[in-house]
Image 1 (cartoon, one colour):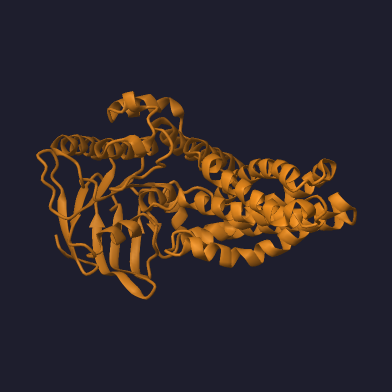
Image 2: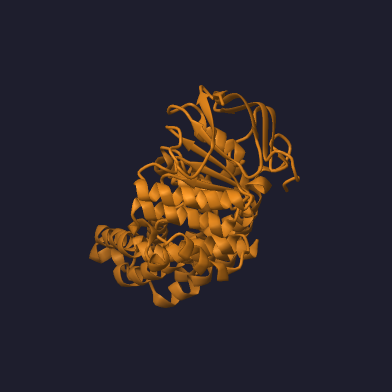
Length: 219
Length: 217
């Protein structure tokens, strides 16, 4: 399972590096969205607003949806799908590999977006650094849930439409927990409790993916 | 999981449904080891669906079937798939990986040694394209990469969906020669095509499909 996971993750990341969709499309889109949020708040509000963590996660979820669609699109041309299916790869390994690659892409994008958030939304650097472990886990959980829901919708004619509709209820608790813990890191409050929710969600989605990915792939 | 002397494929009244629609409506078929079979028929006749059933990509709804000793009704289809190779006319690999990266992925996935890759690339005449991204290859080269992917995998049953589409005469001759070799080495090959095979090198059994059934052989 781990061997297949590493093989699939390396393949997905290599494809991403080569196609540069992340670098030239997804991250610039995220930075632009963050910039628009800063402009919408205006110069008086931007330094004092408590909206920064929420705006950061709003941009993250938009970026994540683009990445999840992209992650599954590379598998869905019918010839590729059939010939890769006949490799008989362990579905749990495929799930873990795709989720790991997606998580790494999300973590890299988050680095840029967090830097952008410090510059554009004037979030405190020390608070942002304190929130880093919780952001890491929350994005990991979003990657696991997104990989699962991406498999559910991939191949369909309306995949790009269905994915946000189906996955947002799954993302909602993660986004709330992530936003709360980031807020707590910036303004003080119960950081650990919200972080635990993200850790539990990560474990639940990884478990569900390991068990269900094969069924979703075959359907 | 082949059983010496027994047919590679046996189907009796095989029916396959998808969303209430019959993809195959009672196929009877028996394929001997080291044989070449060409499935001909119009669009929607069930050629690709039959190949998908043999690959374990779709399920058997009713009837009986064994492929390479695996019972299509009872056994885990995922186990069968590892012994079957698929080549589609639109490409059977990752477009953003290079030729070598695609083949390395297939070899590593099946824990096959990587030292065979150079021989395989030489056999399909893609040595000079080792580091070319798959989407930059011509139609003929893409087909050769698909063949290389199968040569790396060495499956017992080769399922080729419209492999001659958009190939020129040179490409067809190359393809036929390679199929002849793998059949001689013991593989069973099933090809779907709109037209009967025009080959000077191969003598296939030709089956005609209409409405999800094999009607003539």
